[in-house]
Image (cartoon, rainbow, N blue to C red; front, side):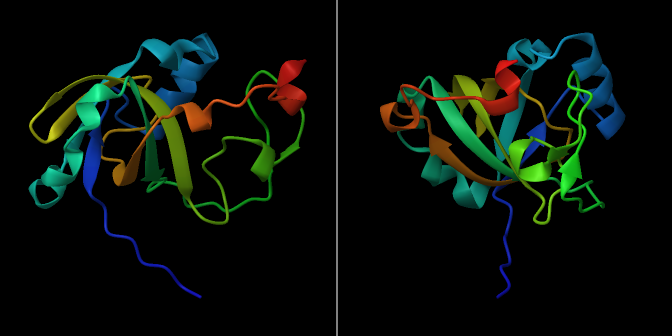
Length: 147
């Protein structure tokens, strides 16, 4: 089975290349929380943004378009151990798909101003979903991250 995706827009980010993300993560792992950027949605999809203004957060689904490696193990920062890729946020995945929960600051026509950006300039946007009460899970556990 093969899937073909058409991007609905691109990310405008202060991170211009992959190395910029790595440097930022080394400074402060929660540093992405304050990073601002824009989601420029192509005009043909702009009508789909109707009613998004009322949400404080959105789920961004994107392609790791610069990731060329596919690995089943990752070495997450600040951990020092080899972990299964599916227990990490590594871009080196069998399918190079990522997601982030971003704070929605405001909308200006087809551009969403967001905070919490952890992807590079030009990242293709595959989909946007609202972050809803359904997404908040009580009693969630965070595996090896809880240490």
